[in-house]
Length: 508
Ligand SMILES: *[C@@H]1O[C@H](CO)[C@@H](O)[C@H](O)[C@H]1NC(C)=O
Ligand SMILES: *[C@@H]1O[C@H](CO)[C@@H](O)[C@H](O)[C@H]1NC(C)=O
Ligand SMILES: *[C@@H]1O[C@H](CO)[C@@H](O)[C@H](O)[C@H]1NC(C)=O
Ligand SMILES: *[C@@H]1O[C@H](CO)[C@@H](O)[C@H](O)[C@H]1NC(C)=O
Ligand SMILES: *[C@@H]1O[C@H](CO)[C@@H](O)[C@H](O)[C@H]1NC(C)=O
Image (cartoon, rainbow, N blue to C red; front, side, top):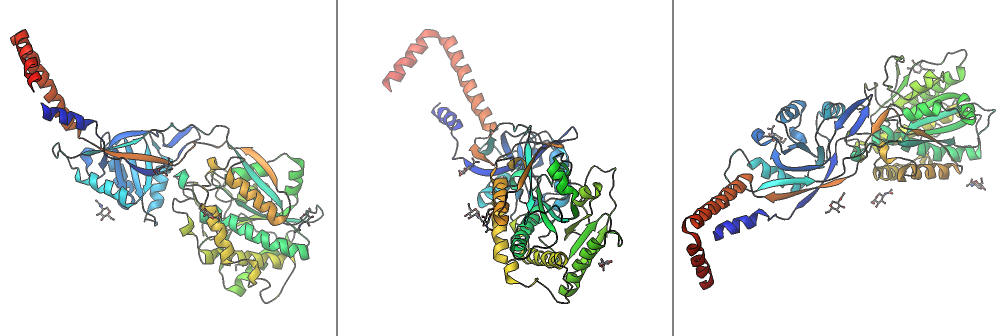
């Protein structure tokens, strides 16, 4: 009997809980479909993905190096109640397909990610040992996370910023430098987008610093407009809103754009590609043809390959692969400069979970900034020199300065839900633009309508040991049996036995 009481006491005993930081798979609605992970809260025993008979009704852990579409489908086929994926710090192979699978399907249970740490691997390895029916004396692991079921971010607004490097003159034609500042990945909390939009922001900031100085000493016969939009990762909704604005002043500014140079994914690679929907005509748009010639000239002097990729706009496709297509639809001559040789085919495809600080090549981004500065300087000041005009100037940009922005951007999650008006990053960006240009950038606020996103935050998952369920059953049966026997004894022997028992206890 004492042993039973001791065991019963153990039932309530839990070992010190371990907290592991976890990040949930995206949850969103698009065109009326609910996608991603639909549930947040967890309260399940754990299982290792290899122990398939353990998976049903449990939270199943799988390491990214073992994760493929096949292993994931097998795992899901065993009906887990939740999935926890362990990520490595370095980029694993074949992630694109998986990201696309996770980002475009609907999962009616929680899917979380965590990073590999010794603690997490201990838990993973511990679970691996729990194969099948291994008796009653191995503790099981309980995983628990209670959180609000994340509400949709209804009425989410975002901001576009635009302004000029130097005073705007309506009498002069305008060249626009355009990029987006948001980031996307299938795990919102881990959206850094360094190469994708981050590189565009960094390039624009560095070019602004340089051209501001240059224009202050000698303004060219062009305006240089800067446009930084949000929801670039969500089909360039921000840019579309900006171009569709009914604000008379903004319409005038847009009407004055001779050429829009859109920046995208400039943080890697050894060459550059101009993506266009059409080339300028040599007769009517000779000045912009000259701009391309200036880029060609920079390419030939520096030896950095510059490719051209012409792609007609597909009006039937709701997915917009490049920013410039929004300009082209408004009949504004435009192009996107990127290290990517081809357009992506979906917005999930365009982003990566591993597009972080480690994914950006500072040498490449510096070379690209110098390349654009050189080409634009040649164009804006009608320079036809056989030698480089500014490319090698130390004050143009530097690795330190770029590294500073990379670190700064890396400090913020730039997923759309984190960029509502007044949020830290957009505020910082606007202040930086104002400072660099000594002016006040205009803000255009717009509602996010194409996608319904869900709010997210980093959470801790607690993991603690519990006695296996089979032991609970033994204890239950033991206690139940004891009571039955006791009841039988009392019934059979009646009062005398009870008083005898009491007497016995008193003597103890
Ligand atoms: C899981 O990945 C590890 C490390 O890459 C590897 O050693 C192991 O064999 C994999 N397991 C399975 C079942 O593929
Ligand atoms: C720029 O170079 C490309 C590729 O060499 C060429 O096709 C194009 O005509 C050039 N453009 C101009 C304006 O010189
Ligand atoms: C980024 O955040 C870290 C830690 O909070 C801080 O030490 C660092 O100064 C920040 N970097 C920049 C460039 O703001
Ligand atoms: C910034 O602008 C203000 C007023 O518009 C002017 O007084 C000041 O000299 C400018 N500063 C610089 C560094 O150009
Ligand atoms: C998770 O736990 C750590 C350490 O226990 C704590 O510092 C951190 O703030 C927690 N995070 C959240 C989101 O609660």
